[in-house]
Length: 291
Image (tube, rainbow, N blue to C red):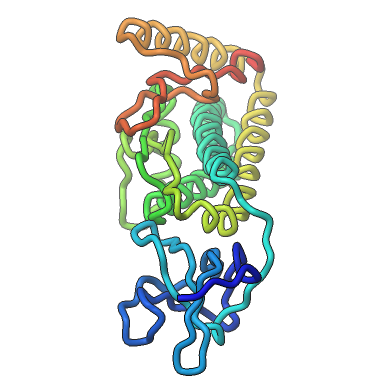
């Protein structure tokens, strides 16, 4: 094995449609993984085998440390070094946005229920809620299935009184042949830690997902604000119910010895605990400011 400083810390990308990463610099060795996008980062080590150069890369499958790719299937590109904390911040933002979004959807769904009872046509808003909710679910499922995150913590929203309204909307047409439960409906990832070896991979492959989560959050917030303006009486009652649920959640949280998470933007009781310390109560600061 040899070292070349000119190929140190280079981003490895497919030259064609995809790249297979091997355990050793040989096609006869075990296949570690195959990707269609960002493959990994070189460490400067290489081997010449049968006239071809094989590059050693940091594996991004979350299982192995090193992998090997052959030069004719990849392109090496200079990329800005990505710190682990930067990639973790990107994951945190996705989670934070979706927590916010779910809370806004619960509120919007309750608006729809009450406004519909008063004779308002909210069919378009309900369809939007279904679409936005499905977007949140897709991102949560992707994080769980990606092998890039560990110590995943799930939380359950404490806006349980609004859950039936959202449940009715989601179960109407969102999932063909499947009726989602209330527990599953309001359960969401509230924390996760990136696997160190996958940080660069996550950074480069999840920019679009991060932007999508931000877009979803903005759409959910805007929808809630639009529905709030439809009927002042309904808005006043919902604000009162939100305030009461916040106080009840705070009381329950303090009773059980939980603490407020300073970075929390929604409030959820934690269902699964991992290695990072997340409070079992997230106070909705923006709710207190906006309602």
